[in-house]
Length: 122
Image 1: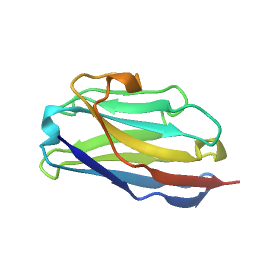
Image 2 (image 1 turned 45 degrees about the horizontal axis):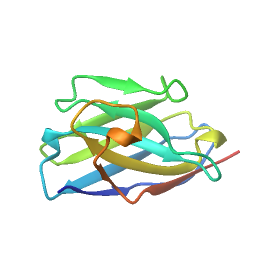
Image 3 (image 1 turned 90 degrees about the vertical axis):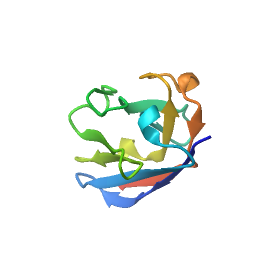
């Protein structure tokens, strides 16, 4: 079992930056690919980014590519999502999740955090 706890969300103006973190406990995250998803009010959850177990491979949704960067520190059992050039449409609850494979579908993820709110004002 892996427990995931997100932090670092908050309110930021459009064009600003924010970094959210996901701290894991219970098992080393080095065994998992780690993903970030987000869900805006009234919308379905959507994939944002994923990073492979070693961190050597990353993949992003088109909506965040070039603005967001996913990274991981396996020694600290933590995954990060650096978000730059934020837009109001990035407003959502951001969730991290762990999977045994690099995947973009939430159905492929076995463990989820509780989420952290990111609000981007215009």
